[in-house]
Length: 406
Ligand code: F3S
Image (cartoon, rainbow, N blue to C red; front, side):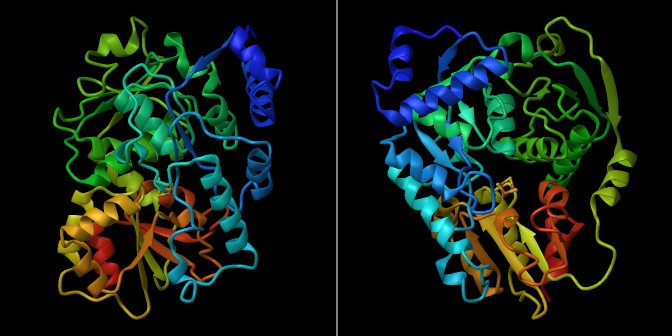
């Protein structure tokens, strides 16, 4: 790789050992992926915060000990560790889970992270512009940044974003380059999606058929909202590894179908109609019967409008004694929703609020749960496997409320 004079000095350790190590990581990755140079980035979104995963507290603490400091705005994904101290009596933790989580949070704060604890950093102040390079982790956020905003990031590997954050650089390959951003498969929507669940399910179908492709979606309503695209992208990125999609007439690099494909012909095409939707909704559920232990909503982290809808549905209802009803939400939206009076009916109904948290990193089987219901296709796709292993009933928010309350 060709480095600038400044980058050569960084690689030689002139800006400290953390930067030297980070440059070693970035140039190694860049060489492996055929990058010719490093490029400057505007922000990082990190997920190096899960006590269960390969990015251990030791790695974060090593960056601190070597004098590391984030040089670009760096936000943080949800974590089970930091914000739910008051819940640990009711929701106990496996041995060392909490202490490892605390160490990771402490190290991240020393490195200068912005403690957003949310998978929707673009709604929490980390908002790049079209064409800007970033280095983000978290599949749903990456999808949103590339597709809805038009910023440029690869699916950065967890841990590598730390190297990007302390140098302000990333190797130039993949979705940072124009030639890899054109659509290569076509998705025709042949019904009118109305509910948020419809967008989750469309995303799931796209992820299932077009794993790592760049789908161009034709037929979404002109008035499709950012929140609907957030749900579509999260499901596509989770069921497949879709990091970029284009929606014709809606997303910034697809004002027309021709622009989205950049003159190329689609390699494949699928049609999504009401029949495909119904079949997929049944397929997403792994639930085989028995009691529902918990209802999980808030994936991806909700906006005010979703909290408002939940509050209205829960008014004058109470969570069943046999069920835990959990809302996962960013601390920012929680604060605002509380100011607007939407949290009061939710808490009165007996819902447990997991602030800055995500069910994927909660020890669900340790809590004895076998069956959960959720309105999220991403949760439904992930929760039946490692590390949570629960069966999932995929339902819309209304049905989730019916299942979890009386
Ligand atoms: Fe966010 Fe967790 Fe869902 S990180 S997208 S709430 S799986």
